[in-house]
Length: 247
Image 1 (spheres, rainbow, N blue to C red):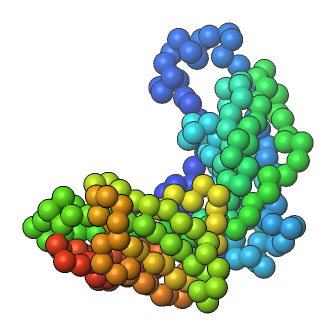
Image 2 (image 1 turned 90 degrees about the vertical axis):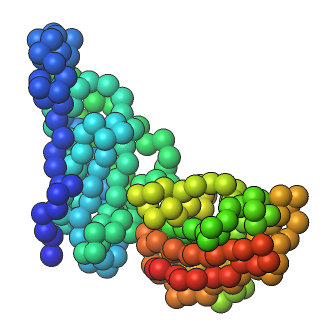
């Protein structure tokens, strides 16, 4: 069931934000953009568990959110110009399980003079990848005192058969305080499908890139589209070991 959320809004650059001069500027013309959307290969909202769809136009300048069944987003009072568009589909847990990010540069043009423009084709949403995040600690020590330079990450399908992604994270990467100092593993190719990922290997490396102790292996149930996989480990001068895992 669709519920109202704090992020649900229609964003308009009002005079109080852009200044009185812009409101009186005859060249500051605005229009409306209507963007139809579809889920996967024309699947229904109920089939894929999408409750609401949110569009972000122009890096957050304008936004709209609707019930998934409505089938289109409407951006009103948008200043004339070209804008990047991102669209997300949320489930009833408020998790973005689908998105349009497979098309990285999805651009929309808005015509001013009060004109309403309808996108010439529907924006397609596909399954969002899972997000793999790691954090590590050294007690009262540091990366340098423990002799660790980086962590090599290998991510596997849940049956351990196929390697989905490999990367290496610098030990000195602090991570985000707001996210509990987790570091997110980059996934620009969207390889971490949430219905498939289920095993992660973390191999600590010393400052020369040589293996430091044995690799740590985490096994877990595939979390689902758009979910976070949070793994933690601790290290000292002798070894690293896994602590808790949050899904």
